[in-house]
Image 1 (cartoon, one colour):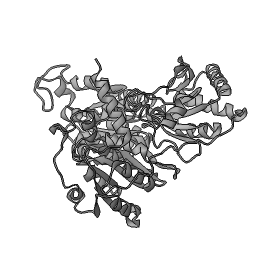
Image 2 (image 1 turned 180 degrees about the vertical axis):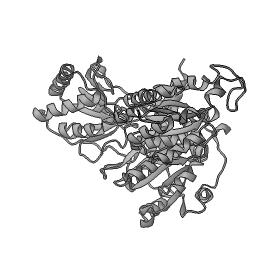
Image 3 (image 1 turned 120 degrees about the vertical axis):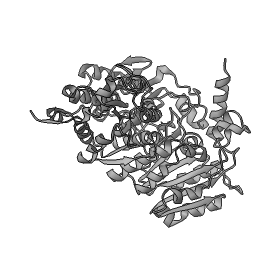
Image 4 (image 1 turned 180 degrees about the horizontal axis):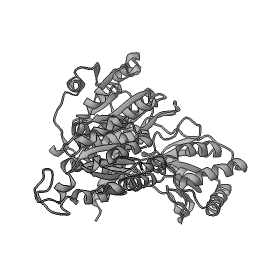
Length: 567
């Protein structure tokens, strides 16, 4: 019977899933395992630390479909856990591979480095047990005879739930043989189909509500992005002609250039006309609703259950009644139904401006409202934009994309780990470069968040993804100031020379830096042809007043503080 090394089997499976790059930090319990990465035809992309590696794997998976990160047992995996927890929360499929001490060391009586200083059976399971709470499946490969099956079980769970998994590999087990035949059996990359009878019943109920609706709408939310049903969402928008909206988590998921686009919905953080259209609708098709605090204007949304059709990965709720059918197949069947029997609905262009603040007044100094409106005009087809938690995540939804057809965006709306965006940009932009799917790689972050993961700049530069990085320098944590402690010392950060960072982190590469203090500075830079061509890594420091914030931030942070004060 044909056999293969356990470690080689795992990397072959990753290759089958379309993974081309593996992120991580080398450690002695995984060094030999890493020798197998290039042998599988994969590229090792080491990171400055495991936290950045986890974020990079997250960003890579959001673009590529699946990501992988390798760390060492103990300190390495613990450092990575924040990144894995965020991916678990936001349904990002990542394989976390952990190099373990040998089997003999785990069962011996000697204190091993990276352990908790304890010996004996079971003492090496502590970190694995911790990871079970932030992954959808785990395994530690102790037996090479079952290793192939254990790997496949875990990877299939990752694909099914679109969440991270954990695979521990002892140093010696990685080089033992396991059956190779399993590699001929494809992993389960598609969800099992719905029961045809049940599916038809659900589609009929949805169609019945649509047929009698007088003011139907569509909302595309983060769950639609993470469940990869954007093709179906776009088709539904075009087929129905309904007014459509996105949430903060859904920004950049569908084009905004149709006359039926109505704006960004986030409860009281939305513009009045957008709120009115949604909250007065008698039929809401909500694709991938993810009702977290920051995605709903701190739970200020007001959409009635009885008029909502809530599409989720594994179920649909119609008027609050749950049906256990998968969203992707229901959308496909609904689209087929609509094409066979078109709606008696006449498409109407929205009568309001989804971006009423798109032409703000010019002040002597740069303001938040001017910045986001200007960035919207700067974005063009083929751009991929990552926005950091905080002011950037709130500001970027205010950047109009009505003039373009293909600008993709994401931020970590729910988990909200500051510093995430810079690390995630490494993986996302590398994946885009491999796939040829990104024309310009753009990161928008704040100086406070940047200070947590700034080492990722070295990766952005050396992988030559030609990233354009906008750094909002507003003298500290503006969002947290607005929530509480406007003048408190804990909301300040050290002063850095942001314009000098690219030269420090990539002295052997061509880089550029720019300083922007006024609207004139910004307009001149965004109109510059060389800057727009993004021929090298470039960093833009934006000087903003520490008390200034987008309107959506002011509204939402006031709601956050009120919520925190509730007893």
